[in-house]
Length: 434
Image (tube, rainbow, N blue to C red; front, side):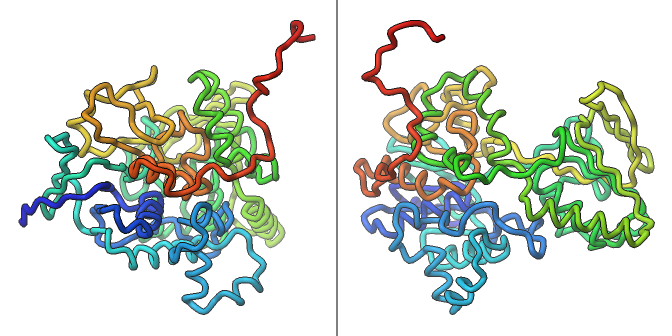
């Protein structure tokens, strides 16, 4: 192994869409030396969930760069032109595009950036005499600033962890599995977009028609994503700045209230699912479909098959269902990569023992010598629902790069907010509220 010590200004750990956005914007700043490390051999974005026909929940204009640098060559529009699909794309009149096409766009950008290093995992990140030192598979790299972008990891209910295997698994890698579900009973746990897409594929017989399909969700119903115009203003720099200034309990309350603005089911998916369920009913299909909203998974037992213990949140009753297969569509959770273990003792934590993230997406540390450690997709509790979404990806990348460079290289404050989130400081109340 070559232990050559390389020196850069900014190093990235992980190459998902968020660090790819930083790399794409940094590509137009020639004086900034960057290097991004990824353990996988090539770029891939949730390949296990790329169902045919699945669509994005955000506009194609919310790509890697356009929001802060519309002339950057790594934009989605330039991707369309480069592939000879500009006019054909316009003819489709799509605002939200297919996930397969967006994934291809991301891979196209990754193929053009010389700063990316694939098949080169960062094993350890520590503080040296001149900033950070990254020990990775191909050597060592020094950097004054580091951004963590390894993404979130599958969230597996505690009661299901010991049963993970060929017949009980998290949905994140569904398409990589060779499934034959003909005549089986299948339980899908989770009522978000992924759960809906898995159920739709099951109803379409993608892996053979099951005998029984049970869809379990904690949510009170199978609820649509709130894509109304004013809900979309929660995904703006102005609201994120306001959210970050709030006290932790108020932030937690708002995250719950805003859940459906970022974590609901696309209306088109709900319609397709409902239509397919109705068609099966009309045709007299033998498939037995059980829709079970407002159910909390309390326990899971396995011996040959599986038995799921549920609590009905509407009337507080309990029930048990059986299944040959369990597919967990239970989302993703934040987790720091193992390489930062040497730095854990210096991180500032909140009451839930989660790292505190500053306004410029830096991890707050009790002691440091001027080196800066940033994180993307790791500050939902401090920055709001937009932090884990693509909507503010390019803007966040620009904020981080401005902070690294030490000057406003990208204009991140030009957006005129339609909604005024803060009180007018010049107004003085004359009496108590009526």
